[in-house]
Image 1 (spheres, rainbow, N blue to C red):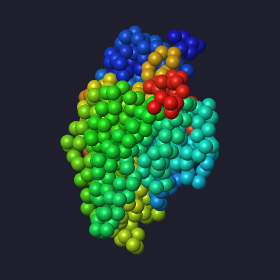
Image 2 (image 1 turned 60 degrees about the vertical axis):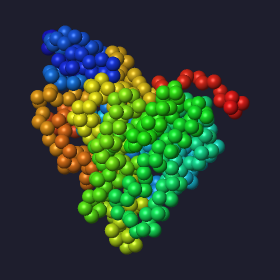
Image 3 (image 1 turned 90 degrees about the horizontal axis):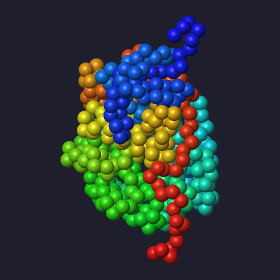
Image 4 (image 1 turned 135 degrees about the horizontal axis):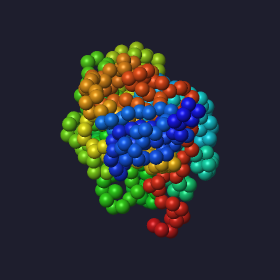
Length: 497
């Protein structure tokens, strides 16, 4: 190349073991104008000029992580809790952990009749603030006629999913309201996410514990036994079957709920499921730490009993019961008595009350490293669960979650060679979120993303600068309907039943 010649490619990744959901092989990879341009057998691009060359010898090269369950910049939806991460700190944490696209929530308040107002408000919070690419799910708490009529407008604006709750007084929908949402979702090609816990039974269980003054963080798990989750999961599936529309059961913690989902899938029903690292690496014992420390691990559903339940969730990941593995990053500062975990400590409850502990744990940065280090999934299955399937489920594929030349964005996570990193404990001091703890403190990992690239630009370089991307580089990604949904379904009619 002469001094006057400019490199044709913006970036070349050499000598890596390229992994997709379908394949694993040694390739060189070329990037131009933010897109994957070429996959060539190892050695074919060695002397090709490029603006940046990355040697990935001995390392996995994968599509960037897609985390489809992230809570950022949310107002108090119930109680005092306010999420600690905004779109700057949350997406900064994401890229440090190898995630290149997130899908977060635009929450509708019970007092709002419109969904578009909630979307506009959340869009304003994200615009110009994100390090990684992003999109939104609409969180529906008030399915008015106006809100349901706006589903078509959501699709036009690139939003193709909504979330509803079967619990929490401020968010809970009754069965008839759920059917309204599912029917409109069927007609407009929207995927419905369902938080499946029986809210009425939860309230009853909580009252029993309150009457006995059993209020410590560990009783959060007692108030939400597995049957509470499996019953609601079964009911959600029944409602989805009535309307004949796809549903996704989010953050499944219980092997018994997973069994309900597996049976529905075996029948051929369009039922999908998500689980999260807290249900693979935390247990109920983590809620029983000294003093109020257990509050750090309070999330809903709660971590279950132990290794036996963990094995049930791992089995579901391996056999396809779970379509995706998300973080459910829902961060609250622990040592904060106004909007954090310690808001549950009051003059009335000087030792705290589990009912008032803000529900959620941080995890967007640790999701990939924890799961990769467990060595329980093949590399292809890992990519399927953490990148390709989330992209397919939520209408991002093949722009995201793939490495298709000329089509896919050049979003990459490049790991260390197997001999290139010593196992080390996770420490909150090394993380990039705006939270004063991680529930995974001290857990050992044997891998961490070395480089993260978004649309061909390096945004994370663990060995040289850490976060090297810029706030505002992340873009809103308009999404199409789910690859898993039925195109143009036959109009639903009560006469069919």
